Amino acid sequence: MKRLIEKGLMFGNLIEVASPALVERYNRALEHLSGKTTKLEDFHIDISGYSPEIGHELDDHLYLNPQGCNRQFILLTTEQKTAPLLNAKFSFSRDILRDYIEANEAKLFALITRDAVAGELMNSVYDLATPVRLFDIRRITVEADTTGGDVKNARSLQDKIERFRTEDDAWWDDVLIAEMIGLAKQTGDVTRNPVDLGAVTVETESYWTAHFGGMYLFRDVEHPALFTVGEAPGAIPMDHVYPLQAHNHVAKFFELNGLTEPIVKARNTDAAAILRQKMDFILVDVAATLGQNLAGATRRDLRMLARSLGSALPDEFHGLADLLRWVDGGGSWPKITSAHPAYFYTLRAGPTKHRDLVNQMLAELTPLDVRQLFICHKELFYQTYQGWADGKKAFVADFLEREYQVDKAGTRAALFGPEPGMEEPAPPPPPKPDRMIDLVGPWGAVRRR
Image (tube, rainbow, N blue to C red; front, side, top):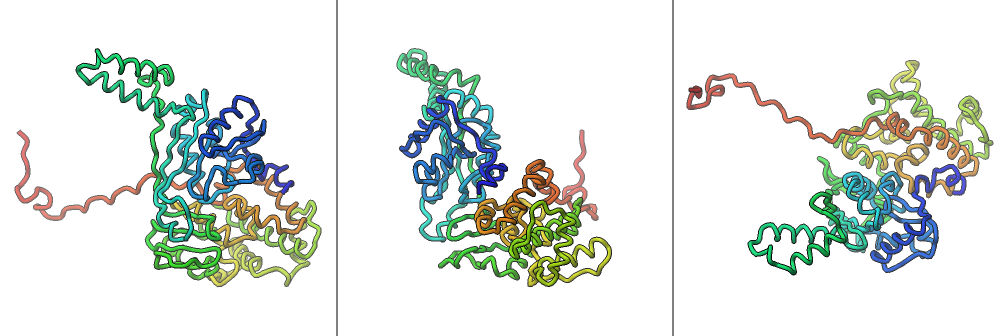
């Protein structure tokens, strides 16, 4: 893992906390949330304020995520919006935190100049003793305040100002006026500079969770289903529950709900380049397993290696090679069904609101495509990385540093297409009337005076 850390591929983009003032604010927020404090004088935090160094110090890497269920967060700077989320238990957590910071950036900036902001991603579930409890998670509410209660005090001051303006005898209420003055000294002028963050609620109908060995839950699609990575759960309130290894069911689910598209048919995509790169990754895995030297290997070296390996290459490689020949115009269309090991390597998520979740699921179905695994499912990437041969570790780390780190946004757009739009589809136009009664109605045309 040291190689990944040195290249910025693990714990990258974390926010450094080194000044005594920020450490003090962090400790106040940490004690406020968990009753714990750190003795470290400097450390790094992710988007939620979690620090791997503090997790190691406390021997509790869920110190901001009790039971892995309701994620707490500490904000010291709005720059945390660009940081990753470590030890993620749900796929929606980072997106909710990032959107919350961006939506309240000006207010947060004003608040964190004086104090840390502490909050929680709350749902109605407080423990996940059984998989059934996952189905109770339908919406997440984000609530936050400074450790000094600035937001709470600002709301109280707003209420008192409203009383002062509307109640007839408020001008002579010395107690009310004194309370307003006391609160204003803490919050400032809330009429000109409001600091009320408010509570934000986000619907979470479909998501991935790391609990129970890993699950992908899709509820807001035409044909809902649950896919399990680990052992099959017990009683589940859902008609269609399949293991992720049931490729025919997974493929049918994607097709029925229109969640994927073939790479070779995707618009504005260099399908040949993507297929070649996937083949290279598969080839590297085979070569490393056989003990081949991959140090400094170029694409030309890999092609020569492919010729020498021949029958040792897996069906995934041969299936993609057949498809590549068709793309290049030198072969017939290969019939690759869901029973073929190369099938899911030929797909990417379609432009729907579930794009990132589907790409994460595809990454788990195509573990030899290490680039997609790293981009879409980092937790699984780090887990599988530890079991690779050293030659593969070195090749993949060098490739990701060279090809992905320099242009993350460009690489993601080239592989997965542009971000899906958030606008609702336009309503269909009304039918054209073909009878006079449809044009003027049953009472005749309305004349203007």
